[in-house]
Length: 419
Ligand code: NAD
Image (cartoon, rainbow, N blue to C red; front, top):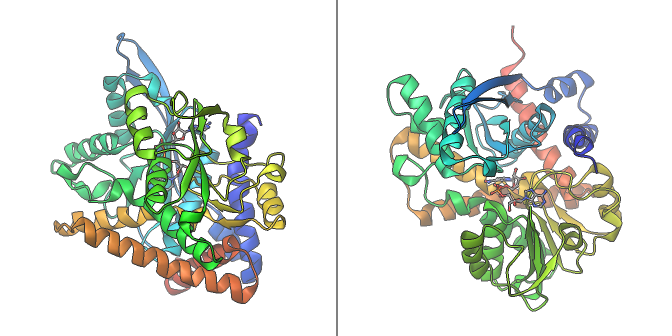
């Protein structure tokens, strides 16, 4: 699929998912229009001095989809294919994800069209500081709180915290989450998303009478979400038979040790050349005969062409928006149980919420406490979604969306429309 088609479809997918849920909720058209429309969108073109002394121009975005339930929250993506439409879709998904987990946030997302791996550390730091300064009119602990996403990490979050703080004249840890612990980061943030993917997958399997140690798993993406998911599922006894990254994948029907793989990636930078397995393409990984498939890289990777060939019985959406609308329909008709992104990968924003609360109070929790509260919030909301799906006879995505949107509508009704 051409990348422009893929990018356009992220927003189309987000709107189509919203429309489907709005139809189930019988929402009036004017309310639908309000909820569909992003509140504000900022495009910035900015210069960075590269190591050779020359100026290079970059384009970045920050979109606030909704502020109905509170300040906005959402990650920052560094990837060559980032566009306004993609960021807008990701921001809308954050609104529903936060509402689904009952967090006091609206949705946002940001991004810069850049390949971070092609920059030196100094270039990446200067790009991050300038981008932060450019979007700083939108940021603040009571306004908009970024976090990591594809291509960004705790080090980059630390630079964002520092840049914002320097301009304020004092340290403002609560302006960003996913920071290093030494500057107000939270225990358990790095593991949060992958751990949540494991919790929701384990719970789904359990409700279908399957146990984690009985399943085989393929995971696309071995970054923050994919690698932690692999380790967490492996610990629960699942057999991880394939993983991949942007360079390619590795397959071993007898199982891969994700901890070993992690060490390998730290040395070589990719899973593709891992010696204890056979090479596999990203496409072949997605159609492997496994029980559980975890897309944990980018959106739109399973489309209508690929969907009929998917053999997994369960799909856990570690990534945001990995299925197109058509793919979702085909897989549902094949009886595949899909754990939707806003439910499956919400662990990251939950622990980001904990980090924000801890920073505001300057009072920090233990890792045990974080994990206990993460599990409680995820599984409480999982239960509600599961019950809606059963009682209304809808799939988990429709159930999650109707619950999330109804919570935003309730807040909208409580606030009213100004003036
Ligand atoms: P990351 O940058 O840490 O890892 C991304 C992984 O995907 C890498 O292994 C990369 O090589 C791989 N990848 C990139 N392009 C690819 C391609 N074309 N084909 C195959 N693999 C490719 O990012 P992450 O934080 O793990 O995020 C992954 C997904 O999870 C994204 O959709 C993101 O929005 C979502 N997500 C992340 C978090 C979080 O807390 N980090 C939370 C919720 C959702």
